[in-house]
Length: 619
Image (cartoon, rainbow, N blue to C red):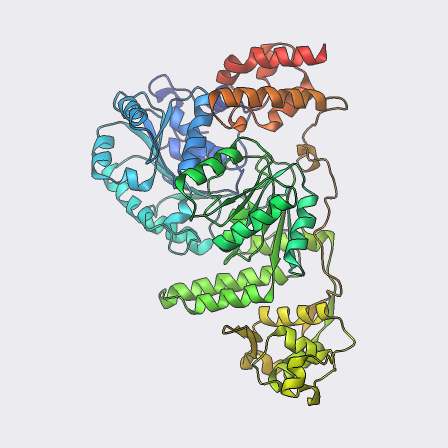
């Protein structure tokens, strides 16, 4: 039973389960949602850790409608706030946002509604909330709860630390007795402790759901012609929306041009674009178009679009937390989504180099180093990649996931000790002054101008690897870099050198080195099931034969309605709702209202139109 008195709920509000069904159109809570809501309803603080798409928002939206007063939602991104407000208004909920891009007239309207007690939820950035005038204004209102979304931003150990979030610790003093709920999809055990301490929520109850998302296919490939690999992947996802992450603005622009030249609709997005350019790109992405966003990490956090079908990384993220956050933007609707990480030895070496140049305190550098090495291990693992990723969050998967590349296309191992010794010896005997291409040429016995110039054809290591193709030696070098036995030095060109403590045991036969057997370049596994409906992952029902026509008609109706209201199509109905309509063919409003995701407000607003579209199509 709930720890709060349902009969004592003020202002005629109803119990959480009733709100869930009547307003949001869901028959029951999932996972830990109800327990977290009960905690907030009873006036306690909570830290909620759930994967993207796991239903975190309901953990504060439902109690916001049950507790008297206005709920304050702290959010880091304008796009996220606008999407949330648009979705809530579709449900008939009085929601508003105050941020730097709200027009003055609209801001005055929101402020007036707040003063009059007409707002159920108010979204604000931490900077706006912590302004003296804002805090003074809010202390005169009845506050239902305070939700801190993307709470990992408050932690110095988090991958997206924002110093302004630290000021949120003051909220406990300014609003005594008001429950606070912090929420995030990415926080390892160290970050979770820091979140609670930084927010002054040491007495909060922690609700940790499984981070395993069975609809995500996670894959990683060593780079072997990056442009060719990207094109092969995109060709399997034509007509779908996705994100391609790049490590720099220049690479973002260059990749977007190349992808467009290959016939795809692609838009660049990075911090160097003007506010107008970013707004136009974001609007197109939110519109439901099958557009590919080629972006730096400046794009993504808070993206609510549910039908992102893929995420590609052309450069390695610096931590498993950042990687999981970014791939988590795919498949929020529960349908299968594919992710691909392309990585190389130079990426690994560059990441280590930049970390070594960091001016961060030693303690922070140590944590950053641990996370980078965990990310490198994740790229090179031959075990279940999903299980390896979840282990970074302290979660043990009972068995292999069955939906990552290591499970669907296992990679064999071989005793690479001798091959590694050949590489290390060649690098040492050439003076540790050359890059990978030259070392491979020496191993394969090629007579290049550089080899002849330096007399390397006379070395004992010349030609000892002629029985193997260049790709094999590239793989050995990359894996030695990943294992820390080699480092690259930046200069006029990148050079390879030995890391004595790691290389010496290999050269002396004091250790056996098992390496990935990559005689041929790996390619991303083709989807095992081309059916992109929820049933391919979740087991939900899908349109029967002949219903795809109705599905397309309903999508067209939704698109027209969304354009008329200037809102993203997915805030009206998710694809999963439209598919359920195709299956159940509701004949009246009562039957339509039984479909998950159709609440009272949407039934009143769209019910007649949906029934008419369905009737006409069937007729």
